Amino acid sequence: MQTYRIPHTDLEVSRIAYGCMHLGGPWEAETLSDEVRRRAAEAVQTALEVGINLFDHADIYSRGKSEAVFGELLKAGLVRRDEIVLQTKCGIRFKDDPPGTPQRYDFSYEHIVRSVEGSLRRLQTDYVDLLLLHRPDPLMEPEEVARAFDELHRSGKVRYFGVSNHTAAQMALLARYVDQPLVVNQLELSLLHAYLIEDGIVANHDNAPAYAGVTGLLDYCRLHDVLVQAWSPLGGGRLLDPPVEADGRTLRAAEAVARMAEAQQVPREAIALAWLLRHPAPIQPIIGTLRPERIRACARADTVALSREAWYALLTAARGERVP
Image (cartoon, rainbow, N blue to C red; front, top):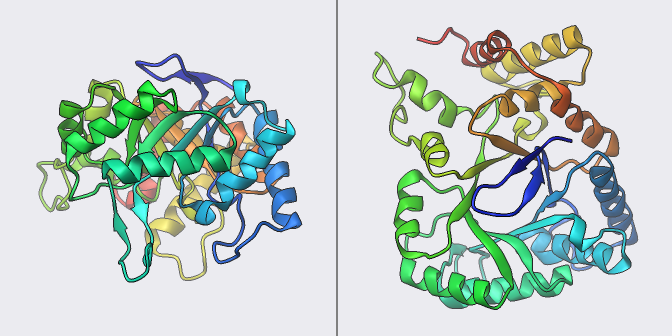
């Protein structure tokens, strides 16, 4: 698989990453079952076989069990630590943690450091290559974040830092205080959720949506050499198997993907992901399926080169109208 070099780092990462949210099985289960362990091992091994080397975690995924089962694979030697790029996220806290508290975001120094130390224990490793702040905390005090980043970097527990679901302005504010560059922003992006791409297209036109021209987020990331990672790049599977009650945008996009996949004799996954890979940002899709055949189908996107016309044809289908 082709790779990206993440700017301001020495990390060479696969164009497609593997998201580990589902590795730990049901969130409500208290322990890992043998079946969950088997499926996790099979999925991770398949991802490695197709050339994926970046594995994306978060401290909350399956309430810590996703990191824990991956840590077992590392300890067993099924995954070699020096051959992968390990990424995790922190900042989301569940309701009743501790009892009586609401679900919330927490970028305090204490929580960031404590979360990373917990992730390292579960992953059974001394360091993570990338730490992302999961969702923006309106109560963020950037000086505290900077102090946490400094300690984690100085101790060797985190090599590089980034964010997830942050706006350009939120990134700029944080960048003013932290010494380490923000090298990644993980965002929801797909043919069904293309608002960040359409943002600059529909700005300053009649009947432009409220978001148009407001964020400039993709341009900010390109300007500041930030790798964009796309979560839910297949629209939660709706681009492949739209539900009966799907809206018009979903049906149009799924039909266009299916037609193009048939014409090019590749899986539908490959077309939907190639649409993101075609963007010059660049964009790294994060896939999350546990099914080996779907992982292999997604990897085929690395071999698909969409023309400008094909890219716009898919966008037009999803929009239901031509670009302005």
